[in-house]
Amino acid sequence: MPPQDHIIKPVLEVRNVTKFFGDLAALKEVSLSITCGEASLLYGPNGAGKTTLLRMLASLARPSSGELFFDGRNIERDGNGAKAAIGFVSHATFLYGELTVRENLKFFGSLFGLSHLEKRIDGALELFDMRSRDGVFARDLSRGLQQRASLARAFLHDPDFVILDEPFTGLDHQSVKKLEDLLLRLPEQGKALLFSTHDFEQGAAIAGRLIALKAGRVRYNGPLAAAPFANLGIVRANGRKSDE
Amino acid sequence: MSSLKIIWSILVKDLRVEWRNRETLASMCVFGLLIVFLFNFAFESAREETLRLLPAVLWVAIAFAGVLGFNRAFASERENACLEGMTLAPVDPSTIFVGKMLANLLFLGVAEVVMAFAAALWFNFSFLPALGPLLLIAFFGTLGYAALGTIFGAIAANTRMREVMLTVLQFPIAFWILMLSIDSTANAMRGGPNSDWFGGVARVAGISLVFTVASFLLFEYVLEE
Image (cartoon, rainbow over all chains, first blue to last red; front, side, top):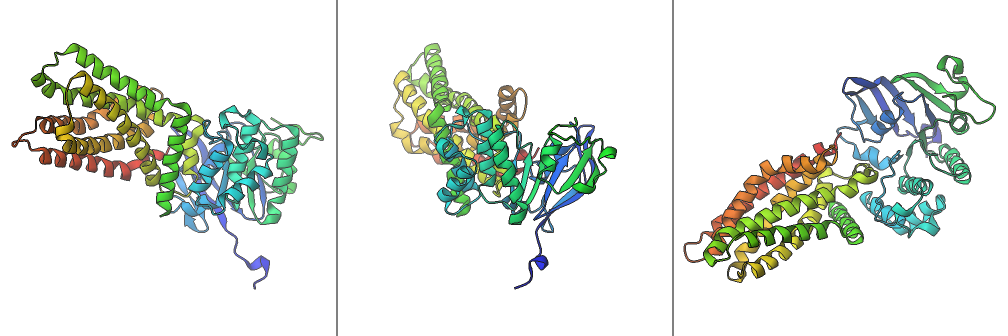
């Protein structure tokens, strides 16, 4: 059996990607790669292109130019491998209001062709303390509970790449703590985590790598500890405080 | 096999959503019945007139009730970006299309049965002598119309004036299915030895299959931004 270091890990790669919305360039020649076993914080001011980049990695948006690869395969031509490996949480919950939390998870699990679905659903619900609310219609949940159900949906198929756009939105303190603990464990489990948050200190406590975006361009991509915070306009706070 | 399971999941999900809110089918039936009733009220129901008018009355009612249904079919998908959520899964977009289309076909089919029953009652006409050909025409005509409604419903779902857009986009193309369906229905209802009902069914089936296959193939481009 080869040593752990020699096992080829799947890579999600962005090569020279530019994305236009009309005349507005949301991303400009962005290149980066995400490898399993690392947690990366995507950080930048409003309009930096964070959501666009995350949506593109989740196959929800196409680049105007440039390419995205998963495991060496172009996502545009063969995106199903990437989709099966990615769990994505967005601003939208992707939940059907007329279905219960369990029915929502069952539906999305069936789309992924998951075996032992009920067991997986129980596990995902347990992970986000939603077992007691599995029979509640999604429309009747508060924003925070909807976010937890959405997170359960994203983790249902045990993805290797976890991509989260503002995952702490609407969560109470206890849920935030629980999610932080969960995210901290992902790299140890050999999974890749890429997430955005407006609270830099919160993100820095989880991520080992920083990808700083500004005006659609990557300003920094490397170890968080070595980031030139002053050049990036990031003011580190003692307490938890956003610099925006 | 897995595609069939996914199609089944989407169909069951749509039926469950409809069962819970009871909006689509109820509005389609009520609207369709209203149209049939208004036409019945407006025209004399002499038998010859009935034969001439009834096919058009029914297909106009089906067309407008269908638009209502197709709009509703994507309302639940639009909410919380659920259609996008489906595309996060490793599924072929065409399977999403088939699942949604089957749900539309089923809802419109149920509404058609209600409308046909009401039309038979109000227009004092029996469909039974030509039931076989009429069922085939209704099936193929509805299939093509539901296929167009599904793809244009998905396109219109992302536009601002979606209710108007669906009608504006769909009717110019659906016109061909509706026209052939009206003609074939009238032919089948007339009956008799000179009734070329088989040719009518074949024409409706042909054009419907062309539009269904085209919609099936083009749906993945609709799901893109």
